[in-house]
Amino acid sequence: MVDLSIPAFQGDADALAKLTLQQREAFEAWMKELDAEHAKAGYPYGEQSLWKATGVECWLGYFNDGYEPDYAMSEDMSQASD
Image 1 (cartoon, helix red, strand yellow):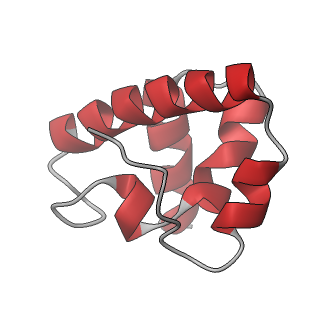
Image 2 (cartoon, one colour):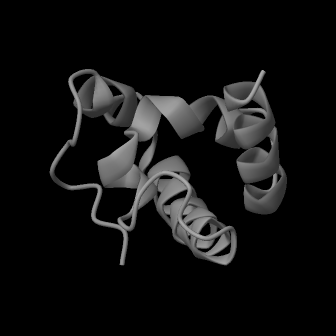
């Protein structure tokens, strides 16, 4: 389960505070799906939730831009290897 109640990185709390309750709930559900994609990919960012491994700010842009979790994972991994 994604627990966004305790910020993992500096800046995460501020980023989450800018979301409405509806946006935050949608983002939490999206992060749960993203963690599933992370597992399918063999945990390239370590065997933990991406919330803990990379923080909110790393993924919030993808969420805000309308990326599906699988595409966000693929896009982020391709940028990391460039």
